Image (cartoon, rainbow, N blue to C red; front, side, top):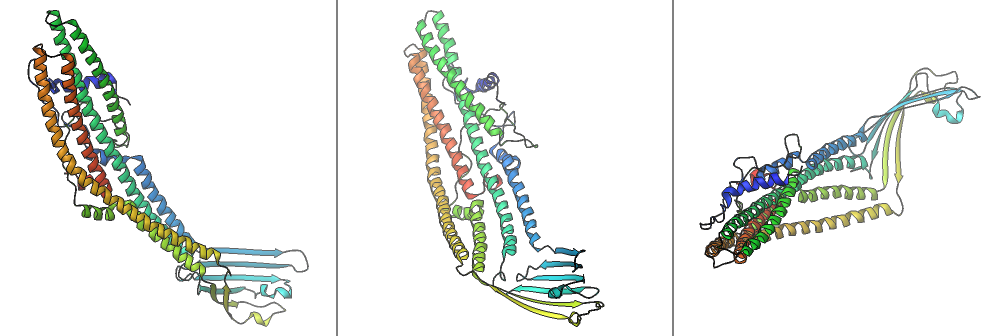
Amino acid sequence: MFIHARAAGFTCLRFVGTLLACLLSTSGSAQPLQWGSGNEGGSAPTLHQVVQSAVVHHPAVRRATVGVDAAAASRGAADGAFDLQLRADSTWVPLGYYDQLRLEVGATQPLRVAGASLDVEWRRGTGNIPSYYGEYRTLEWGEFSAGLKLPLLQDRRIDRARAAIRDADIRVAAAMLNEQLERLTQARAAASAWIRWTDARQKLVLANALLSLAEERQRFIESRVASGMTAPIDATDNLGVVAQRRAAVASALQSAQQASVSLSLFYRDTNGLPMLPDWDVLPAPPSLPDWAPADTDLAVSLALSERPDWLLLDNAALHLEIQRLLAVNSRLPTLDAGVGVSQDVGMGPADFDESLGPMTATVQLNFQMPAQQRTARFEAQRVALEADRLVLQRQQLQESFTAVFQEGTVGWSQLSERFGFVGESVDVARQLVDAERQRFEAGISTVFQLNLREAQLAAAIDAQIAAATEAWNLMVNWEHTTGRLDRPDLWTR
């Protein structure tokens, strides 16, 4: 996956064929760096393309999408609490004085309304059933019964089953927000990788251009040494400069290779596989992005409506509200009412009990309450503390949004001014290099002095690249904070 150093170096040297015929010629004046548009003659990815590729194909985003499907499956599972419950039971006593057969078949349907449940049952008991188990006896065709259970206090407004469904709905929404958050996270990582890659390519071209100057000067000095116009030590002196700049090229090449590999993690093909960016493209010159920060208050408002992590706090508040309702519910006493009817059908046995014939109606009332209610009290306390923590988390996040936008507004203004000053320093440094070179060719300057001038020019250009890189990072940080970075069409021009 790594780029071969010789091939990459050859490509960059081809860049500087027009680049620093480049900074200076042996007999001419200083020329400006010949940058490309950044995309001619190849397919170097733009920031927009890298971000779009990352938010669609990155494994972390796809994993978050699977998480949404998993949450939806959990939501379906929560509905299982209201499935119709079927049951059957049989007891056969073939040996003994009380030989008997008892059969029971029933169904219970939990209802989503008021915590109620419906129950129907058929049972039959035959054989020698002792009198003290008279309730097991039925007529020939058995007993049919139906009943309704209704909680009057605890579990009437909410219970564990209904809370689980509401919580599952919240978790589905949270999974969707986490997917958006992952897209935003990967968009930022992709944008940062693209900026680093662009910065490294520009620095590699600059390093190669400076090396080309030193190598061209070495040939010029050697020709003068051969003609007796210059002492051999000048050639030796310049060889040291060539060696230093070759080391600088090697370091810049390493950084560019590493940046390319990092970028490939976000720049992917249609199959989602990492794709190394094209090196056969002259990078664009360092420049500020075609962008400007919005009003701070507007940006904060946008972040509060777009940022998934902020919306996840709203989601967490809904979850806490369910926990609060459950805590309140658990402090209520259990008071359940039940009504039911039963009817035996068929002929009776020889010792027919007339009580089996008429329809029977029953009304039940059940009361239960823990005395200390420690579980309920401490659960309510926990939920209240979690709510307080959520308020502080909101405050912290909103303040961080505001700080980013305030810093960005100030930073952009200063960067724009700084970039202009750096551009002026590049022009001045280039003029000084041109003058120093003329002095060198006239024999009144040294390799050391010319090297210092070129180092000053390189430092100025490097500062220009650094200012541009900082500006691009500022834009990315701003749009990431607004929550729109994963949708470049909303903020790129």
